[in-house]
Amino acid sequence: MGLAVGNRTPAKGWACAAAIALVALGSQMHAQAAVKPGSRVGVFLRCTGLDDPLLAMQAVKALGLDTVQVSKLPDRYYTPEGAAEFAGLLRATGIRADSVVAVFAGESYADRDTVVRTVGFRPLHLIRERLEYLRKCVDFADVIGARIVTFHMGFLPEDPESEAYRAMLSAVTDIAGHAAKKKVTISLETGQETGQQLAAFLDKITVARVGVNFDPANLVIYGVDSPSKALTHVLSRVTSVHVKDALLPDTSGTMGREVRPGEGRAELAECLRMLRDSGFAGALIIENYVARGLKTDPMDELRRATTFLRQSGW
Image (cartoon, helix red, strand yellow):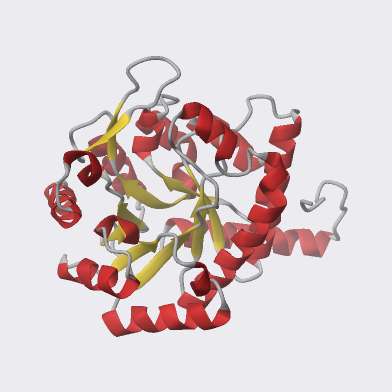
């Protein structure tokens, strides 16, 4: 099902060209020309609390922002006609789609065990179906001008020789190769593995350079790693960042909970400093669901998060 790259012996010229292409891709992912570090603050579209894409884009614009990460949409948009319609909405509102998030049918984040059973490529019997959906997301991203598609690959087994690890590696390799043909970068969201584990996994993929959608709060929610420590391992691969904060789990085997930016343990100040010092020029995407628990207005929470970033110098 994945790309069997290990048994190929390419010609020397092809290998040199491929190496140059991978270096170029890495440079594009890490530093976008004519964009000042920290200048692209955006919103995870779903976090506006509005289901209608047009209304959600208008709400983002009302915040004084013009960048979004596109959340899961009705299936009709993942067609050539639907993608063209969505691209028209972006043009009409003056919004730029930085990236597209693939959310698979049947995924649930109710608790840790459910995440293991349902999220990403860890349910091996769903890999083929989910790869097909990812291809649609890549095609959609290409049409609307987003050069990044990100998703959770699920809990990564510790043993690289295990069946599940090899299957997940094959699946990510497969979609990364498909996306590269359209000049779209696949970017894995952090959370269910340490930064060192994720870096080692990504180093095994050679068909294309796979990026990281860095979510410091997820690392806290799952209690797997210090966000700043994790960032040191994947810093050069970060394509976008989720601005989100959280508290650690109360007990082993449970999950932490999200809080407002600056009120949790996600080490946002240190992570933002590291990103700034590295010259990171990608998008800082506000992903904020605290309104659900606090029963507040989602737009008010987005304004708070925007203020937090501005006060942090972004």
